[in-house]
Length: 234
Image 1 (cartoon, rainbow, N blue to C red):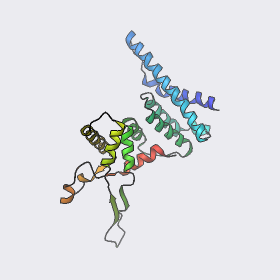
Image 2: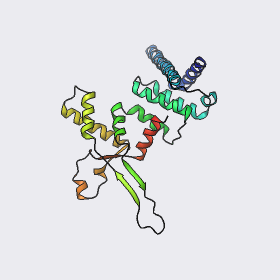
Image 3: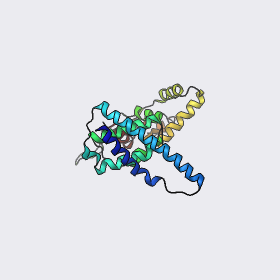
Image 4: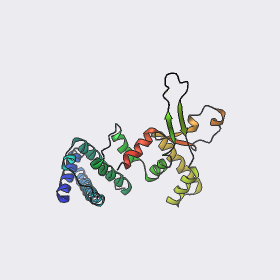
């Protein structure tokens, strides 16, 4: 079954990326096209083989109806297009986890393409940072029932600045202390710009809030929580 499935998946992958390599003229362009094609095929083969090993290790029995389903084909094609552009093992592992989950507990989202782009754009440290804030954010209810004058809602934020900077220094020992702080600021600003985290300083409207240090007390957005659920739904 694995050999048959391997050929099916590789065949599906070839079909998915054929449009990504248009015909181009000139000897140099044709040579570059051939090299890029070989790299892409190598990455696809490695990805499919390691994915099959993962399925075997997890004891997942593949239903041929799921493999041929529209939903699986859509997300497989979207992932393969990103696989050919990366050799980062961390990102490839996330892509395999997503595909494995689609075979057992499919996860529907309006943000599938956006989430896959985020896997491509975020690095290991940014996803680890996001996980630290997983239990922050809004909870309760903001709906107001008839005859009730208030709402039951909580907004929980926290700071992991020291912990994150320490992780950065462990992962990038060549950085100075000031450079580590700079990288912390980049990571937090990047996560905020992608609507994954919110800086409480930007949402406060009291004097105490305005006096807080920026990029320190943060909370995860609902979009950020859905992204984490998407990449590790299993």
